[in-house]
Image 1: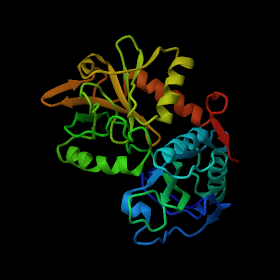
Image 2: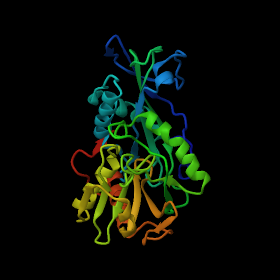
Image 3: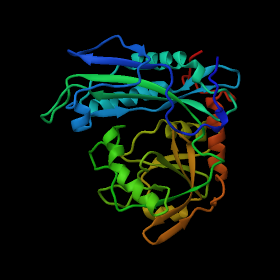
Image 4: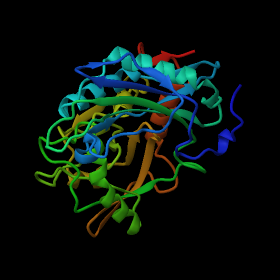
Length: 340
């Protein structure tokens, strides 16, 4: 029986659901893991995650398809990306097959919380891991906990999509050869001051540049960026300090194989910004967030696609990918994980 929720008016926030998955790492191995009804975490005051931010996470969604099935979108890539994050943070890898098994268990256990098709809502899943035992010296923890919780969320944009304004900040997001390419909590903590400062000054997000030369576009605090050229080429910045977005990777495939567009993953220089016709942020939460204006110091760059709606190509990319996710279009092999 589906929960009695006003699905169409859900916001994008946390709602406690019935079950979450918990697995503990101790004495060099993971336990079998289990579903739990307890949403609280109890740990020592000196736990590794509290002292040295040893934590990483993922984000993905479960959807109700047009024919009534419940599916997840490319969870295998979330599992692989979490492996990379764990390796970089000296955390024990959670096996990829166990990761996907845990995702399936959490979605099935919270089936009543999966929003119905056509409501615009989805079940958001947050896998994460953290160092749980006491640590005082600067070193990796010895014990860890892997968890997945689920929460129903509404569309990222309430009342429709409105193009946002980005600013190029004085802050840097990630250092060369640092941790910008992994989904570590510390990366997001470092961006909080910059995003609050941006909001206080009337901007929606920050467009970060490479910290080495500050001449090339990288990403925002929580999403990758795509650009559309005057010739309808889909361009994404290439850098070793950009998080490899699963949504971006999927959009590039959609652009080439479904829409017949040329794609490029390359270095994007700041001076090119004025030449693009469309720009958007891409990620799990909103899929695509159109950009209407970019502010770089005193220069205001207005995208020709305008500040009222998505650009034509961006809209086609958005519609095609979301249609694949909910089963209205046939998906490439391996993209959709059937849950029930």
